Amino acid sequence: MSKLDVKKLDCSVAQTLNQIGERWTLLIIRDAFHGIKRFDDFQTQLKISPTVLSARLQSLTKNGILEKRKSHLDGRAFEYVLTTKGLDLYPVLLSLMAWGDKYMPNNAGPRMKLLDKKTQQPIRPVHVLAADGRVLSAKDVVVRPASGSDEKMRSLINYRSGG
Image (tube, rainbow, N blue to C red; front, top):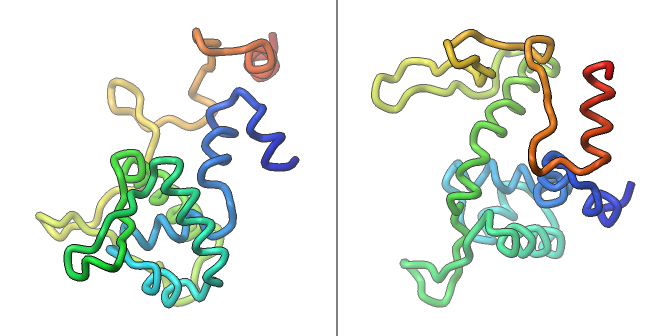
């Protein structure tokens, strides 16, 4: 399915992939969370071609995930900073990291340790929680159509629920 085809799907996952699903995009976002801001630093860290990096940064900026602004250190240079929309991707990255550590582990152990800045204690992995705090799996969740569901989405939801 081409990017153009994915754009046509009225699905939150498809629309999200349309904005962050390109190769390199999540790695750029990951590095932005680690404090990288300048084009040259992204390129050095990722070993990505300038053409591809430029295209990905332009797309992330256009989609409101990064903001391009003049550097406060050098008014001629630009920095790319996560917006609120970009910052909201943090749990997504943590989930991908936890999944990767579980299914594609490094023989030496986890690649990163995530600690609470205040207490320096390890943080818990990302979970889906019920209103009462119970951890839920996909089997524990029921999906129902909502006001924004189109006919295809309703069909998918009905397929999953056996209806």
